[in-house]
Length: 228
Image (cartoon, rainbow, N blue to C red):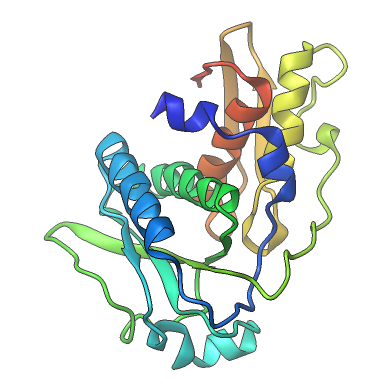
Protein backbone atom coordinates (compact mmCIF):
# COMPACT_ATOMS: atom_id res chain seq x y z
CA UNK A 1 0.00 0.00 0.00
CA UNK A 2 2.86 2.39 0.77
CA UNK A 3 4.20 1.82 -2.74
CA UNK A 4 0.82 2.73 -4.24
CA UNK A 5 0.77 5.98 -2.31
CA UNK A 6 4.38 6.82 -3.18
CA UNK A 7 3.46 6.62 -6.87
CA UNK A 8 0.91 9.44 -6.43
CA UNK A 9 2.38 12.91 -6.81
CA UNK A 10 1.21 16.42 -5.97
CA UNK A 11 0.83 16.97 -9.73
CA UNK A 12 -1.74 14.16 -9.80
CA UNK A 13 -3.67 15.84 -6.99
CA UNK A 14 -3.56 19.19 -8.78
CA UNK A 15 -4.74 17.72 -12.09
CA UNK A 16 -7.69 15.83 -10.63
CA UNK A 17 -11.07 17.64 -10.47
CA UNK A 18 -14.62 16.34 -10.08
CA UNK A 19 -16.21 15.41 -13.41
CA UNK A 20 -19.94 14.67 -13.78
CA UNK A 21 -20.34 14.25 -17.53
CA UNK A 22 -18.75 11.28 -19.31
CA UNK A 23 -18.30 10.04 -22.86
CA UNK A 24 -19.77 6.77 -24.07
CA UNK A 25 -16.33 5.20 -24.34
CA UNK A 26 -16.23 2.10 -22.11
CA UNK A 27 -13.34 1.54 -19.76
CA UNK A 28 -10.62 -0.46 -21.47
CA UNK A 29 -9.97 -3.99 -20.26
CA UNK A 30 -6.50 -2.93 -19.20
CA UNK A 31 -7.85 -0.06 -17.11
CA UNK A 32 -10.55 -2.24 -15.55
CA UNK A 33 -7.98 -4.84 -14.52
CA UNK A 34 -5.66 -2.22 -13.04
CA UNK A 35 -8.48 -0.57 -11.09
CA UNK A 36 -9.75 -3.94 -9.84
CA UNK A 37 -6.27 -4.78 -8.55
CA UNK A 38 -6.00 -1.42 -6.77
CA UNK A 39 -9.46 -1.81 -5.21
CA UNK A 40 -8.57 -5.30 -4.00
CA UNK A 41 -5.34 -4.05 -2.38
CA UNK A 42 -7.18 -1.19 -0.68
CA UNK A 43 -9.85 -3.55 0.62
CA UNK A 44 -7.25 -5.81 2.22
CA UNK A 45 -5.32 -2.93 3.76
CA UNK A 46 -8.40 -1.05 4.99
CA UNK A 47 -10.67 -3.98 5.94
CA UNK A 48 -13.23 -2.75 3.42
CA UNK A 49 -15.43 -4.22 0.68
CA UNK A 50 -15.26 -1.58 -2.07
CA UNK A 51 -16.52 -2.89 -5.41
CA UNK A 52 -15.79 -1.75 -8.96
CA UNK A 53 -18.88 -1.86 -11.18
CA UNK A 54 -18.52 -1.27 -14.93
CA UNK A 55 -20.89 -0.78 -17.86
CA UNK A 56 -23.93 -0.35 -15.58
CA UNK A 57 -26.07 2.72 -16.47
CA UNK A 58 -28.97 2.44 -14.03
CA UNK A 59 -27.49 3.60 -10.71
CA UNK A 60 -27.23 7.13 -12.08
CA UNK A 61 -29.42 6.88 -15.17
CA UNK A 62 -32.57 6.14 -13.15
CA UNK A 63 -31.94 8.64 -10.38
CA UNK A 64 -33.72 11.99 -10.14
CA UNK A 65 -30.88 13.23 -7.95
CA UNK A 66 -28.35 12.36 -10.64
CA UNK A 67 -30.18 14.61 -13.09
CA UNK A 68 -30.44 17.33 -10.46
CA UNK A 69 -26.72 16.97 -9.80
CA UNK A 70 -26.02 17.21 -13.55
CA UNK A 71 -24.53 13.74 -13.85
CA UNK A 72 -24.54 12.41 -17.40
CA UNK A 73 -23.69 9.02 -18.89
CA UNK A 74 -22.25 7.48 -15.71
CA UNK A 75 -21.78 3.79 -16.46
CA UNK A 76 -18.93 2.94 -14.10
CA UNK A 77 -18.66 3.44 -10.36
CA UNK A 78 -17.10 2.22 -7.16
CA UNK A 79 -19.41 1.19 -4.34
CA UNK A 80 -17.96 2.31 -1.03
CA UNK A 81 -18.86 -0.54 1.30
CA UNK A 82 -17.48 -1.42 4.70
CA UNK A 83 -18.36 -2.54 8.22
CA UNK A 84 -20.98 -0.66 10.21
CA UNK A 85 -18.43 1.03 12.46
CA UNK A 86 -17.57 4.61 13.38
CA UNK A 87 -14.13 4.48 11.76
CA UNK A 88 -15.33 3.07 8.41
CA UNK A 89 -16.27 6.38 6.77
CA UNK A 90 -12.81 7.80 7.35
CA UNK A 91 -11.15 4.66 5.98
CA UNK A 92 -13.38 4.76 2.90
CA UNK A 93 -12.36 8.36 2.34
CA UNK A 94 -8.67 7.47 2.61
CA UNK A 95 -8.69 4.33 0.49
CA UNK A 96 -11.37 5.52 -1.92
CA UNK A 97 -9.21 8.55 -2.71
CA UNK A 98 -6.25 6.27 -3.44
CA UNK A 99 -8.39 4.64 -6.13
CA UNK A 100 -9.53 8.04 -7.41
CA UNK A 101 -5.98 9.36 -7.75
CA UNK A 102 -4.67 6.17 -9.34
CA UNK A 103 -7.58 6.38 -11.80
CA UNK A 104 -6.56 9.95 -12.58
CA UNK A 105 -3.07 8.72 -13.46
CA UNK A 106 -4.70 6.36 -15.96
CA UNK A 107 -6.67 9.20 -17.56
CA UNK A 108 -9.93 8.19 -15.85
CA UNK A 109 -12.05 10.96 -14.36
CA UNK A 110 -14.17 10.67 -11.23
CA UNK A 111 -16.62 12.26 -8.82
CA UNK A 112 -17.48 11.41 -5.20
CA UNK A 113 -21.25 10.95 -4.85
CA UNK A 114 -23.12 10.95 -1.55
CA UNK A 115 -26.71 11.22 -2.79
CA UNK A 116 -26.79 11.56 -6.60
CA UNK A 117 -27.55 7.93 -7.39
CA UNK A 118 -30.28 5.32 -6.99
CA UNK A 119 -29.31 2.76 -4.37
CA UNK A 120 -32.08 0.40 -5.52
CA UNK A 121 -30.70 0.38 -9.07
CA UNK A 122 -27.00 0.13 -8.19
CA UNK A 123 -25.31 -3.26 -8.36
CA UNK A 124 -23.36 -4.41 -5.32
CA UNK A 125 -23.12 -7.17 -2.74
CA UNK A 126 -23.21 -6.48 0.98
CA UNK A 127 -22.24 -8.96 3.66
CA UNK A 128 -23.79 -9.11 7.13
CA UNK A 129 -22.67 -6.19 9.25
CA UNK A 130 -21.76 -4.01 6.25
CA UNK A 131 -23.22 -0.86 4.74
CA UNK A 132 -23.09 1.07 1.45
CA UNK A 133 -21.85 4.54 2.36
CA UNK A 134 -21.45 6.28 -1.02
CA UNK A 135 -20.43 5.84 -4.66
CA UNK A 136 -17.61 7.19 -6.80
CA UNK A 137 -18.50 7.80 -10.45
CA UNK A 138 -15.79 6.87 -12.96
CA UNK A 139 -15.22 7.21 -16.69
CA UNK A 140 -13.59 9.16 -19.46
CA UNK A 141 -14.85 12.68 -18.93
CA UNK A 142 -16.25 15.07 -21.52
CA UNK A 143 -13.88 17.54 -19.86
CA UNK A 144 -11.32 17.57 -17.06
CA UNK A 145 -13.40 19.59 -14.59
CA UNK A 146 -12.33 22.75 -12.79
CA UNK A 147 -10.68 23.47 -9.46
CA UNK A 148 -13.12 24.66 -6.80
CA UNK A 149 -12.28 27.50 -4.47
CA UNK A 150 -10.49 26.37 -1.32
CA UNK A 151 -10.05 27.86 2.12
CA UNK A 152 -6.78 29.60 2.93
CA UNK A 153 -4.31 27.47 4.95
CA UNK A 154 -4.77 29.56 8.11
CA UNK A 155 -8.47 28.63 8.13
CA UNK A 156 -7.70 24.96 8.73
CA UNK A 157 -4.49 25.32 10.78
CA UNK A 158 -3.78 28.01 13.36
CA UNK A 159 -0.01 27.41 13.50
CA UNK A 160 0.98 28.00 9.88
CA UNK A 161 3.61 30.66 10.62
CA UNK A 162 5.56 28.47 13.05
CA UNK A 163 5.29 25.11 11.25
CA UNK A 164 7.95 23.34 9.14
CA UNK A 165 7.86 23.31 5.35
CA UNK A 166 6.73 19.68 5.07
CA UNK A 167 3.69 20.50 7.21
CA UNK A 168 2.79 23.46 4.98
CA UNK A 169 3.05 21.26 1.89
CA UNK A 170 0.73 18.77 3.57
CA UNK A 171 -1.81 21.51 4.28
CA UNK A 172 -1.64 22.67 0.66
CA UNK A 173 -2.34 19.16 -0.60
CA UNK A 174 -5.17 18.61 1.89
CA UNK A 175 -6.93 21.74 0.65
CA UNK A 176 -6.82 20.45 -2.93
CA UNK A 177 -8.91 17.38 -2.09
CA UNK A 178 -12.61 16.88 -2.80
CA UNK A 179 -14.93 17.75 0.07
CA UNK A 180 -18.70 17.33 0.44
CA UNK A 181 -20.38 20.55 -0.81
CA UNK A 182 -16.86 22.01 -0.67
CA UNK A 183 -17.20 22.48 3.10
CA UNK A 184 -13.61 21.63 4.16
CA UNK A 185 -14.57 21.29 7.82
CA UNK A 186 -11.30 19.65 8.87
CA UNK A 187 -8.58 21.19 11.05
CA UNK A 188 -4.89 20.26 11.39
CA UNK A 189 -2.38 21.03 14.12
CA UNK A 190 1.37 20.51 14.07
CA UNK A 191 2.53 18.60 17.16
CA UNK A 192 6.11 17.56 16.36
CA UNK A 193 8.15 16.06 13.53
CA UNK A 194 6.20 12.80 13.66
CA UNK A 195 2.75 13.71 14.93
CA UNK A 196 -0.11 15.77 13.50
CA UNK A 197 -3.51 16.25 15.11
CA UNK A 198 -6.64 16.35 12.96
CA UNK A 199 -10.25 17.10 13.86
CA UNK A 200 -13.47 18.16 12.16
CA UNK A 201 -16.53 20.29 12.69
CA UNK A 202 -19.94 18.77 12.07
CA UNK A 203 -20.86 18.48 8.41
CA UNK A 204 -22.16 16.14 5.74
CA UNK A 205 -19.69 13.30 5.09
CA UNK A 206 -17.16 15.07 7.31
CA UNK A 207 -15.53 11.78 8.34
CA UNK A 208 -15.06 10.81 4.70
CA UNK A 209 -13.53 14.23 4.10
CA UNK A 210 -11.02 13.65 6.91
CA UNK A 211 -9.89 10.39 5.31
CA UNK A 212 -9.36 12.15 1.98
CA UNK A 213 -7.56 15.07 3.63
CA UNK A 214 -5.24 12.74 5.57
CA UNK A 215 -4.19 10.95 2.40
CA UNK A 216 -3.56 14.24 0.60
CA UNK A 217 -1.56 15.53 3.56
CA UNK A 218 0.66 12.45 3.52
CA UNK A 219 1.25 12.77 -0.23
CA UNK A 220 1.99 16.49 -0.02
CA UNK A 221 4.25 16.27 3.03
CA UNK A 222 5.98 13.07 1.83
CA UNK A 223 6.10 11.84 5.41
CA UNK A 224 4.68 8.91 7.32
CA UNK A 225 2.41 10.67 9.80
CA UNK A 226 1.33 9.42 13.22
CA UNK A 227 -2.18 10.85 13.46
CA UNK A 228 -3.70 12.14 16.67
